[in-house]
Length: 399
Image 1 (cartoon, rainbow, N blue to C red):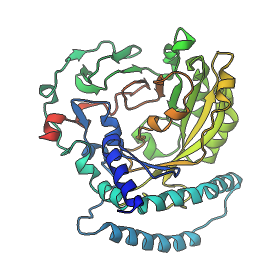
Image 2: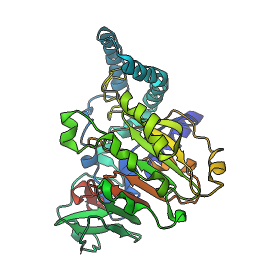
Image 3: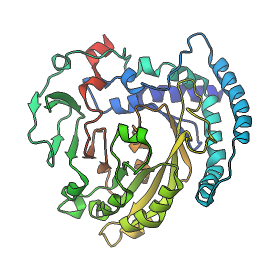
Image 4: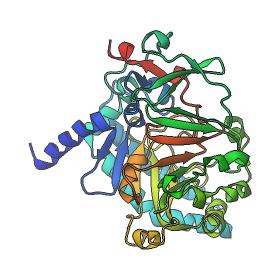
């Protein structure tokens, strides 16, 4: 085999175990969130059929080459149609479009890189059925019989830390429902008014990786049906500096492509938090056949989201000096098939190289709706995707 083919086979082998496929020395990676999440569990698996509930198309009678050729043909036709639909942009929209045009070549190159990875495309077509460890995607109707269960009722659950410090996941009964808590994980369920409870007593117990996925205010009635949003001003009070480890922290903030929001983050939010902007990563969303979930140039529904990265300096007098030489390459692209609405892929492993201070990193996710091993999760619904209905027991998955 040629060197490129050998490398592709090697990356596939790594991908099967890690859930992350790296395209050589490029700035592009592909993520299978199911495989990544399943590394937090030993007795359960995240159900791939439950995770990948959208963006899968029937393609059993077509080849990868057919899919790619069909996609490229549609892309050319739609590009012509989009040019006919261009409207006059206001000043804010012009700035947003300029941002898009600057990053567009990066995203196109990332997508082309994916479409050239034949072995990976073949695997993508089966992610919903295969998942990790040969998942069948059948939900165990009585998962408590499949694992050594703690069967613990936790009261009260609001405004109290709940931790699973064991080396295996814990099955917990909360609100008369069963939830699967990853090994070595912790959550605090509260509203924004109680976020101060997260602040550690000592700065050396703070966090050096902080990922934030705020419920940004949005006028969309559809989005409001999915989850509650908050006015942007509420996020100004988040005590990022107090949550930061004494040697500093990498802060990763999910934002939409709305220019009003980007301006708010750059001019108000990051300065208020004391976060120094460092780089922007992009999440490019694709379907199981490799095509984008929507038109790249469609103004209000672009198939990508932004992750803004910055550094929060800690109390240590040397923290600013320690962070200054740490360079994060800009315009990194990670590609994945989206899960449920607003569910973000687990991207912590893509950030650890840039985290200052201790290893393993002390990790915190704010406005979390999903838990990870080794992380503290905070929000008003950190158990959203921990419900047992989103899991299958490994006995059934492997049977």
